[in-house]
Structure formats: structure tokens, C-alpha cells
Amino acid sequence: MDTALITYHGDLRTTAVHVRSGTSITTDAPVDNKGKGSAFSPTDLLCVSLATCILTTMGISAQDKGIPFGSATARVVKHMASDPRRVARIEVHITLDGTGLGPKERLILERIAHACPVARSLHPDVVQETTFTYS
Image 1 (tube, one colour):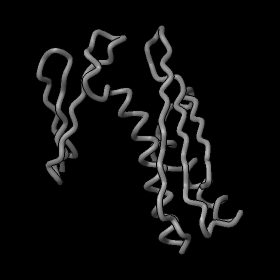
Image 2: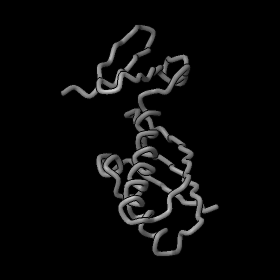
Image 3: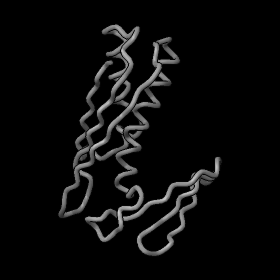
């Protein structure tokens, strides 16, 4: 079964529709690469995919292990390289509610974060820097 259907609209814009749910994402090329920067760029989505995968797998692990996982946020910073143009480094800064999380639970969640499917799918040349802050 198809995962998504993507349409190119011209002017460096696309729309991707998730087949199962019907939700959509619009992309635009970034300003530094001939776009308007009016939506996520494809490389933005790559970086966002890493962060959302980390949070999702942490949530799954927390559910499975009975670890409290009330709220979490992630801030993503993308670093591009040229020649060839590519994502060189992704910073993911995660802030978690630390209530009820001891050192063991924190270690479990942090290990899961580094082993999420997107993290494992990225080329080894892409530097992944993930930090954790507990509030």
C-alpha cells in the first residue's frame, strides 16, 4: 500500500498527502536554494523526522516500561553543507518533564532516543547531536 502521494505544483512547491489519514504537508525550497521559504523544505522535514521519531519511540518505550512520560518538546537545528549540498548535522534539543524520572529511567529514554528508526536510517556522515534537559 502507498504511504504518500506527492504532487509538484511548480515554483518549487509540493504537497504530500498521507494516504491512510488524508493529512497533508506542503514543502517549499529554502530561501538559500531558490525557494520562498514559505513552508518546510525537504531537508527541514528530514531533520523534523528525526526529532519526531525520537519523541515517538521514547513515548512507546515509556508506555511499555511504565515510565512516566507526560510532556516533551524538541527544538531542531539543521546545518547544511555544500559540495554536495546536503544535511551535515542535525541538533535535536529535547526538554522533558523530569517528574518521576530517576537516573535509570532517564538512561533508558536517552538510549531509545539514539536508536530510533530514523536515527538508524540516516547516513553515518550526518552528525546527530541530541541533548536532554529535564524540567
